[in-house]
Length: 362
Ligand SMILES: [Fe+2]
Image (cartoon, rainbow, N blue to C red; front, side, top):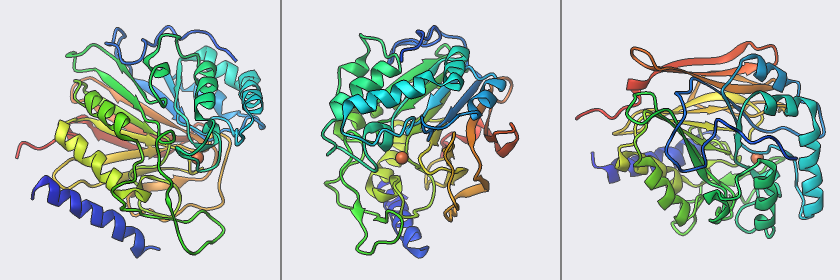
C-alpha cells in the first residue's frame, strides 16, 4: 500500500468513522532556549495539564508537586481570557500568577506552555482573532520567554525543546504546536445543538498549522530523538465528535501522519487538552506505528459527560486531573502514560515499550 493510498484510507476512516457515530516568575535553569541543542540530563518525569480558570482554586497543582515531576507542560486554556481587552487579559494572567498553588508549582519545577482558544483570546478562535500579536506578547511575558527566543521572532508561538544528550539513547524532544494563530475557520454544521457542532472539512485550502509551522515541524521531526512528545492544545488521536479537534481538519490530520512517516520520525507520542476530561486514545496508522494521544484537560474544569471515542483505551477521567509521563530509559525503554486525579490515584495507565513506536523494516 503506498503512502498516498494509506493516507487516503486514513482520511476516509477519519471522515466516515466520525459520521458513523454520530507575573513574572523565576528563570527556569533546566530549560535551554528553544531550538538549541540539549545540554541537560535525561528527563524521566513529565507532568502536564490544561483548562484552569484563574477565578477558582487549583488544589490539583499540589498533587502535581507531590509527584515530583521534572517538567510541567501547560497545554492551553491556561487562563480563561476570552476578551479583546488586553488590559483585562493581562489582569487575568496576573490573577493566575498570584495564586499560591500556581506559585508553588512554578517554584517546584520548570514549566513550558502553549495556548488554546481561551488564553489566545476567544472561544474557538483561529487566525481571524484581531489581537493575536498583542495576546502573544502577554503570553510570552507571562511564561517568562527569553528576550532572544526564536519564539519572539516568528509569527505564532510554536516551539521545541530538547532534553538528554543526542546519541545517548535517552534524548527527548518536546514540540509545542500553535493550533490557533494560523487556523482557518472550522466548518460549522447546518444544525445547531447546545454544543459547537463542527463537521470534518476536507477543503484543501484550509489549514490548521499554517505552511510556515508545517515546514518548521518537518525540520524538527528530522532531528534525532529517542522519544518525541508533541503537545497539541486540541485532541489529535480520538474519534470525531463534533467538538474542536484535529478531526475537523482531516487533511491536516493525515498530513501529520504522512509527515511522521515521511521523516521516519520514531517515538512520537501526542499530548492534548481542551475537552475537560482525561483519556488515552490510540490512532492506528496504516504503514506506521500506533500514535498515542494522552489527553489531560481539567486542572480545575470538568464536564458533564464524556463523548464516545472508539480509539479510547481504558476509562475516561471526569474529575479534576493532570497527565503524567514516566520514562524508564533503562534496558528496553518504556513510556508510561497516566492520568491522575486530585487524590493522586492513576485513573488512566498504559505502559508502552519505546520499540513499539518504531517503523517496521518491511
Ligand atoms: Fe479550548
